[in-house]
Length: 230
Image (cartoon, rainbow, N blue to C red; front, side):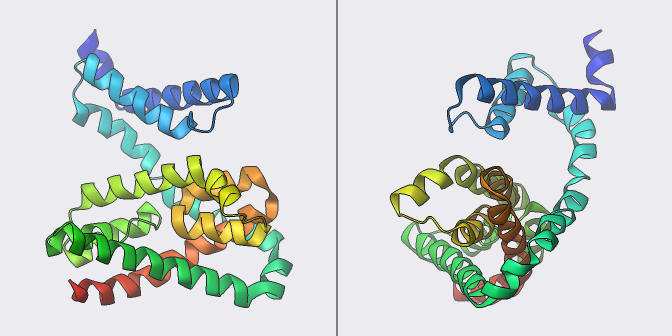
């Protein structure tokens, strides 16, 4: 019976969706930021696979079908941006300055940490795309000769961290303007940060959508340049 269930492509899809719904239920019940639905769903899936002694490859076959939806879902983020187009027109200089600053800060931080912890070139370029959406980050990592699975992990961790702790950090640093929040979430924590920004407000969500898109495109260029620095 176990082999019959886990051998189906629907197993990975079902486990992923059930784990995420459980994460949402737990988050609604306790209302604690660290109990993020995405983070909880990842933990639940890992626990089920480890303690159930399941084949990861079999789970992945089904889970991949959900991953295919990532690119069109990212494109759909253009809708809230279009609805708040007036904010972009009136504040485009500040928005672009924030996006570029966030992008270079991420690249410089990775360079500094790589030197500090004596990472080799492959490890360094693996982490360069950590703040952009997975759909783009995977391509950047492959092009630069990075370790793609580690890149994916770094992107997920960056997204979860921004989603969970972004609002706390902004309160402590007294960042209150909706546009500034949107730029911060989108440029530092890509889609996961954008989902949190959308929960906060429409303007934050729209600007975050723009930031993750622009950051992703520009990082392709910046990462290629920074790859030569270490």
